[in-house]
Image (tube, rainbow, N blue to C red):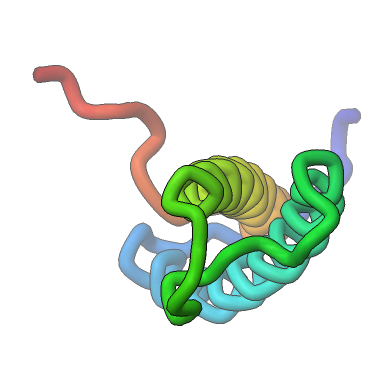
Length: 108
C-alpha cells in the first residue's frame, strides 16, 4: 500500500528501549501461560488418574506417579510459556515496529 503510514514505519524503538517496554508484556504473557498450562495439566492428569496429582509435600506418595506428574506438568508449562513468549514478541513487534530480542540465534 503506497502512501499509507503504518505503525511499523511510524514508530521504531531502539533495541534497549524495546526490551524495557517489553517487560510488562512478557510478565503478563508468563502469568497467562502459567494459568493455561495448569488448566491443561489438570485435564490431562484426569486421563491418567482419578486422584489429584501427587505433590512432593505429601508424605505417602507413589514415586512413579510423582515423577510422571512432574514430567508432564513441566512439558506442558514449557510449551505454553514458549508459545506465549513468541506470540507476545510478535504482537509487540507488530505494534511498535521493534523486535524485543535477537532476530536469529547466534552462530556458534
